Amino acid sequence: MSSQRQTMIKEKIKDCMRAKFQSYSPETRYMPFHHRLLGKDRMALYSFIQSLNTTFGVSIYEPVAVALAQERFRIAKTQVKPANRISTEAHQQIQTIMDDLTVSDREPNKSAEIAEIREVCLTGTLNQVKLTQVDIWLEDHEGKLFLIDLKTVKPNKGDFQKFKRTLLEWAAAELAKDPEVVVNTMIGIPYNPYEPKPYERWTMRGMLDLQDDILIAEELWNFIGGEGTYAVLLDAFEMAGIELREEIDSYFERFRYES
Image (cartoon, rainbow, N blue to C red; front, side, top):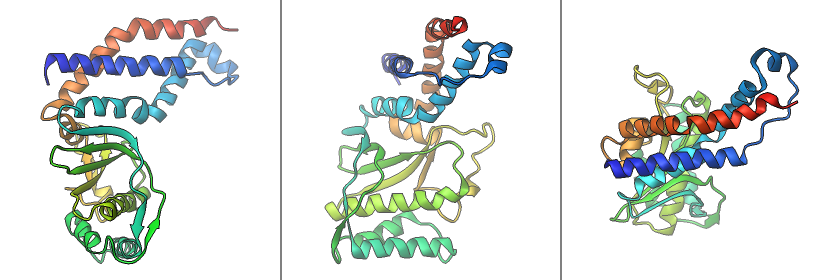
């Protein structure tokens, strides 16, 4: 990543944080013991961090991902409504795949699953469906689609079944619109909370294809922005934090004197 592009990403992060400051309103919670022990400014900062954690994907990761992807992909968007029709036979095929995975009658194999859905993507009635919005929508210069569902870094083990169904339904809907399209649907996890140990992928085994269903940390950001993006992105976050420090301190200082 060029220094010019890194600066652009740093400024994007700062813009996202400033927008968060403008929209943020601390919870009006009376906590007399906490306030006296820690100070209202620290409690306001704590509340802000909790709020930021909840919305980090939409507030920070998604706009940064689009900014990174624009040089590598023809289209890069966030919060995109997917196609809204799935054939009855494709829906049944998805259910068969899910049932087989649940009882371990088959191993996850994304390319095989997509091929099975493609075969029946227009068979039967096309029914309207309401699917989860795509967090990051990418289309390369050859027309290949990459639909990414950003998740928290420690999803519950029981959620992977729901995630898998979403990925298959996105693929089925796009294939119903264009049976020839090359569509890739993936879970994106922004960083590895177990660093320096490997991510605990065993929690996903049996439901997700670990090669084609999920991108974690470096895999995700290097795919979006090119080789080496993850390391440069971490530096951009650090520089943004340093340059915002006085603004952050000033913002929370005002809470100290509130009655």
